[in-house]
Image 1 (cartoon, rainbow, N blue to C red):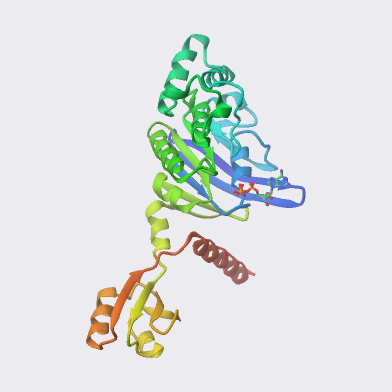
Image 2: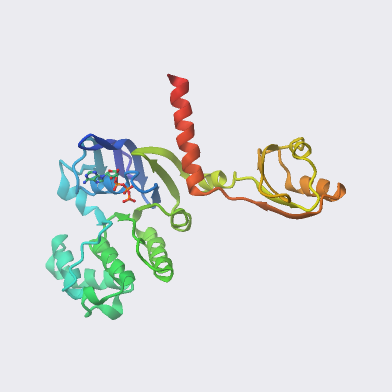
Length: 315
Ligand code: ATP
């Protein structure tokens, strides 16, 4: 493992009885990266995060944190790791300060350094004003900040956050995403989520998990390129026949939305400017030509269909 690889996951499997929830997952996390672990509900994200953090034993495979096997050398591995589970492990009846002191001791921070560690985590997570408040009385957004503070209290090199914005309102979501971006400057981060914009606003690289398998690994530009392959929506007041449109360069398929609106599915040969020129010359009454982003669901479906076609081809 190179010095810049902080997490190495090798052929990780997990069964729940007959259910093969995680099916041979391999990936690595490099220093300085914010990695998005994206997948629909039930894809196996939480199961993988629990195995990475040493909270669930894999059925097979290995997790190395900074070169330490999470099962064989849990203490060394966990010292390099901060984890915010899907359900934050908060004690509602403690104040924020009491709880963070407790977490500092759990993480074996030496006694003389505890106060400074708590101050720093509190400050980084914007908890300065609420140290004396009971956790149970805080808003969900602030409770999530406390959850993140416990994950970073021992300044681990890697922070794992499992669905950190679920259940928050839009303003809280924006604040937590900004906090994650800030964390990314000092820690390497794995962020598990089923929300595409969360990955787009916070991550450098994305890994898509679907039905327990890694379906795609790409950087953000690659993911954006996939999402932009959605074609164009066109509005024409006097449209020509579909055959005429299909004869134009780069148009592969057309879906008619109503009498005046069409979805054009295109390849790289399609040039919107040339299409607009032709529409004006032919007097088709062009009033709309807008690129259509694919949804994450469409990308999942494409990936799954491709996997199944590959399987059939191999059979
Ligand atoms: P979500 O976003 O809904 O939390 P996820 O991607 O995190 O989904 P997991 O929670 O890892 O997915 O679940 C993967 C699969 O394993 C699902 O089919 C789920 O029902 C199943 N599963 C998870 N935990 C258990 C368990 N303790 N016992 C049995 N099945 C489980």
